[in-house]
Length: 287
Ligand code: C2E
Ligand code: MG
Ligand code: MG
Ligand code: MG
Image (cartoon, rainbow, N blue to C red; front, top):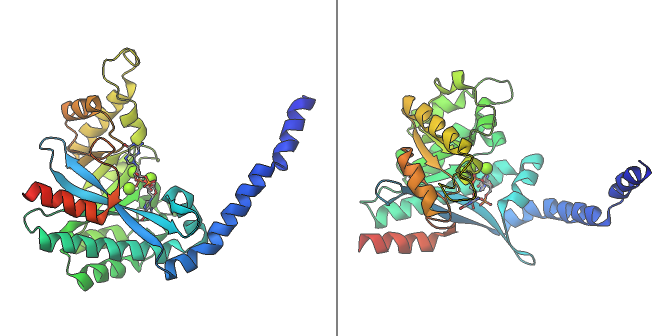
């Protein structure tokens, strides 16, 4: 008991933890200036048709090109940006940059109709100004609304009042596509789901990770595969597209295809890469 208490106390003064806290506050303090200096970059990850293998969309994933720390992933700063409210400005930059890149791809490759998918934080989606921001981002670069998809998590969709956000219908009316991100991990209110103007659900990585086929490791437990089966059927019954996240292996591709999942995203199809690499890939498939 004393030992446990000792450990508990020790954790309070954990030098590594305070070092982390200092690092964390240093990152928070640096965020606004980083935005002004243009240190954020977008990488894009292919979203590929499981039937045809063609790249139908790309997801924009933000990174911070830090002058000293190198390339920092969103998991280290998006939460901080949400807490401080900076996410609204950062998210608007992401949205506008992604629309510009998508419009450039549309002009260079008019036949491909590549959709760009942009993550919206709860705080952005909750702000009624989001509709005008999205409309302006589209209009100022000329991107057709149907080539933009917005990804919201289940909790962001439901808003703070436990009611689906009113803005969703206005965003859908603009013609943009709406997707539920990390589907199956939040509290899926199925009754609301059928009334939401959404086009797509993105099956959360953990369910896809659980699909390992019939190999010796996982032969006993197909529970995740059965969950994916149920979620795909539910989504299709509601006439929604289904994208599987975190697709890493050929076995997963084969199983997801058998389960009638529409599109996949993950290391198997390619990691997030700078815009120029997406351009090169489009050039390759046009040739
Ligand atoms: P997300 O929207 O669910 O994005 C998918 C994450 O899965 C990305 O992590 C991606 O790099 C990662 N991923 C790609 N391939 C694989 C794979 O084969 N296996 C596994 N396990 N994971 C894979 P990333 O880039 O670190 O982004 C993390 C999260 O940060 C995103 O999750 C999203 O919630 C958030 N985020 C990224 N960019 C933005 C943004 O511009 N705005 C907002 N609000 N959030 C963003
Ligand atoms: Mg996403
Ligand atoms: Mg996701
Ligand atoms: Mg996520």
